[in-house]
Length: 252
Image (cartoon, one colour):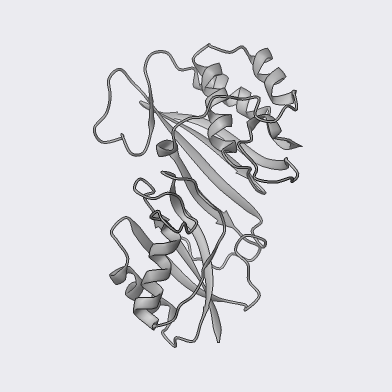
C-alpha cells in the first residue's frame, strides 16, 4: 500500500465545486473516476481545499492510497489520459501514509482577477470579473492589507453549516495592476466559505469609491457574521497553491 499526492489544475466553470456531490458534476468525482479506470480501485481522494462552484485551481493538492505499482510520472500521465480536458494532473508524488492534504497544509494562496476596461471580453469571461470605469488599485492594496494578521473574519464569511471558529490568519496580501488586469492575492492558513470572494467584493468597493477606507475598516472590525453582503462571481477566483513544510512538488 502506498499514498500518492497529486498536484491538480482545473477550470471550475462546469463543476459544482471540488467536493463530491451525488447529483452534480464535481472535480472530485472526475478524478476518482479516472483513478478507477486506470487502476481498477475505488478510492476516495482527500483535497486541500473545497473550492466552490465555478472556482478554478492552478495548485489544488489531493491524496489517496493505492496498491497500483506505477511510477509517479507514469501515474500522472496515465490519469491525464482518462481525465476531461478541463482537469489536469500536473505532478504526482509519493507521500507518507499519514499525509492529509488539508490538515498538513501550512498555507493556501488564492488570487482574484478583475478585468478593468470599457466593454465586455470574450477571452476573459470565464476567468475574470469585469469592472467598467475608474478602479484605484492602490486604494484596494491599502484596504486589503488592513486584513493581514490573525483576526475574526466572520464579517466576510458565508454560511458555515455548523458552529466553528471564524478566526483565521492572513500571512500576506497583495494587489497589483497588469495593464487592464488587476489582481488581488491573499495567503492564509485557512479560509472560511466565500471569504475570499466577499473580501474581494468589499475591497473592490473601495477601489471604485463606493466605500471609504473608514467604512471598510468598520465593516472588517464589526464582528457580525455575514456583514459583508457583497460577493464577487466565482469565475475570477483561483486557488493558486497549497504550501506544505518540506515542499515535495517541483517548481514548474
